[in-house]
Length: 461
Ligand code: ARG
Image (cartoon, rainbow, N blue to C red):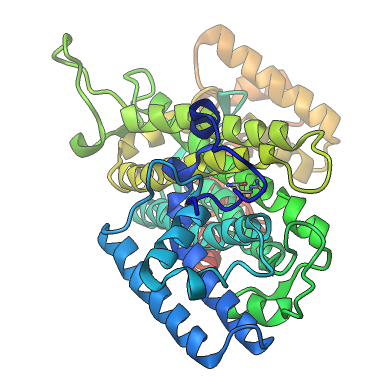
């Protein structure tokens, strides 16, 4: 007997070229714990169906336990001619308990339902682990927000000065985006918690095995409703990858701002030495490599998602070997986020903000012009006129190289009869911030409410 799971109808073994192409143990070995759990559950279901005696079940579970220990200790590893993780572990079991009992485990299952189930189990665990790491980034953002409850900064649209906002409000915006990603993985889990085990190769099992009990045994909510769909679908992997890519895109947007903020021209933040790098030639350099790698890795994760989608596109039902290509891109996304998230969390946690510079820049670029227009609206002036008048103020200031608050009483009267010196009351950053007082606005009271809401969201996960 060969180690292969399908030798029977063949007279010779696979060519070296085929074996080299076909092999997946170098990447699917990480599924070993899930394959072993699947085998334990399958042994029990065979036993319940009367296909495995009490004694054989005991031997089988004992062998699987030993094999599990040997996998964990590194004593058992895939052999060069093991095709995949499933083949290798079946070989390992048979080596431990012999072919008579060990050879009974494969009844009623196929690598097609095994791999579809195990990939789901693995990703469910990863979604939980990665979500915790995303929440660490959220916490770092919230800690920075809490440390700067009243710091104003120039809020931007089109990267141009727009209106003053609180730094905390800006940081909270990134936190909300990442929290939605965590929510996405939680929502995804409802669909992922389905076990294709019992689907067999594609048509289901004839041996009276109970897919429902095996599903529950594996911590899944329910068995798949359709054995063809169970073995052929990979939208669970694509959806997981989308969330991973979305996390990376959200990190990349934080990263891009850190890169800009750390320039001499912005001067908003200083990076901690532990989260920046030097140059091999320019002694003065302090580079934001963590942020740049975050920005760069986003491209990689988008590529992982796109690659998987391209693999799935046009595949006929049910299982096709193309599906073996589903794992590496998703594993890559997992591995990338695993190292990226702690680095971004550390970088954010250790940023030092130049709050004086932020405050000084907050009113620049006529960012209080909207406050002038809205003051006029409160005096009963139609907004169309108010916008025009405030724009007139900006024009005069620009010509003279002065700020809005420097317009004299005469200047104001000359620009428009609607203006009077009272308008100066809104020409402060504090006044502007406090006036944006509706739900979700940047007023300090709203921002501290938001903070409490965010902390509750973090605690909920
Ligand atoms: N290693 C394969 C995969 O990852 C599972 C094996 C299914 N092979 C087969 N010939 N039906 O998709």
